[in-house]
Amino acid sequence: MARRLTPIDIPQLETYVLDNTGDPVREPDIVKWGAFLASDAKLLRQDILPNGTRVSTIFTGIGIDSFSPPRLWETMIFGGTRDRYQDRYSSREDALAGHEKALALASGKRQ
Image (cartoon, rainbow, N blue to C red; front, top):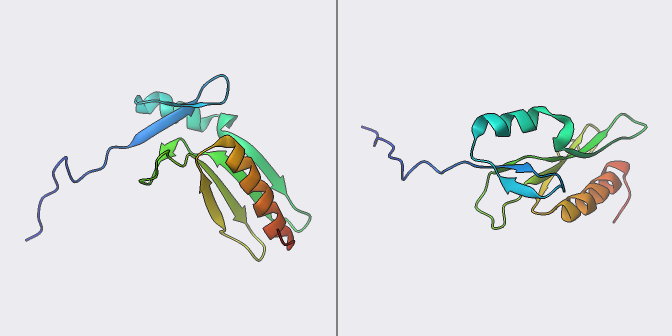
């Protein structure tokens, strides 16, 4: 018989939004968090290459791992030879640098 989960077993979801200056702030209200994610405010940068490959960097708004500080930004490549490439970052600056790295990878350039 499987053991029943207790509140200790279930990790607490840490949700964040961006304030007016673009800094992440904790948002415990799941409705406000969801409204933020439904907006375009989460998109940091997106590029579409001539071959149709898309490189996208967004603010995820969720601390999904045990890293401290939480990695709240994510870059992904959709299409091309690096399809499904993904990396996460704990700062806006690192996310922008990671976006450039992903662009180079998606373009077949070395970095």
